[in-house]
Image (tube, rainbow, N blue to C red; front, side, top):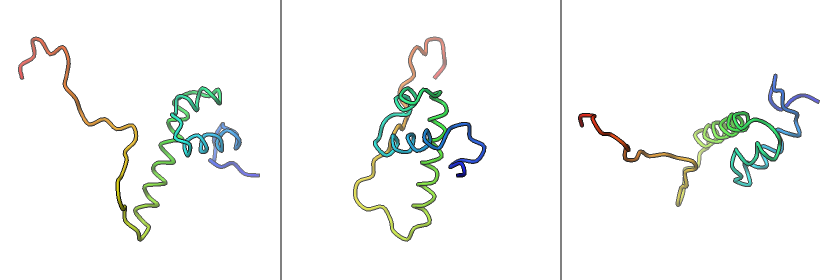
Length: 87
């Protein structure tokens, strides 16, 4: 049986669980805690899944319909403690 991700130190069981947690919309931090792996590892796997999903959607013939939800996005904000800085 070959690895799901080549040269990965994670077992296929762990990778499948991470994919399951992604599908269940469980946060990367929580998935890492449940599996006993580093959060950065699950972040990386979540990012790989998102890239594959976006590439698939770009190549498919269908377009987005209806409402689109973005996950874990940051669109700016107001800077705090800007004393002494010229604006």
